[in-house]
Image (cartoon, rainbow, N blue to C red; front, side, top):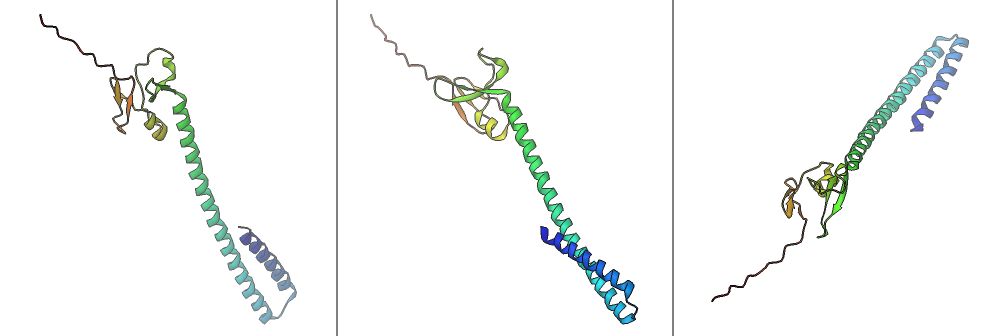
Length: 154
């Protein structure tokens, strides 16, 4: 990246020297040669400045991409700050709003969708809750034991 800057400084120095020599030289042929060299140095300087501008545009684009990435990360963190992870007796887990506290929450949110997409998707169902978005299943309570009745005949 410093190549173009060094080249540009060199070209500018050469142009200065050529300009100073033009003041002292009177011969037309020598002046033509100096003007030709000056034009070549100007073109070289323009090329170096164009390369620097292209490099700068690439860096600006990269900065913009990183700013979008940081913004998305901050937005994701802000969404996650609103929820807390609740683990059920079955070992499964789902998110609940922090404002619901210790009371039995009205809604559970899919942990997979919230962690990967930062999108709160409400789980639906009873003991086995399902996510309509990613089809993830969360078992909130163990299966009740099956009771058998004895039928007595008289």
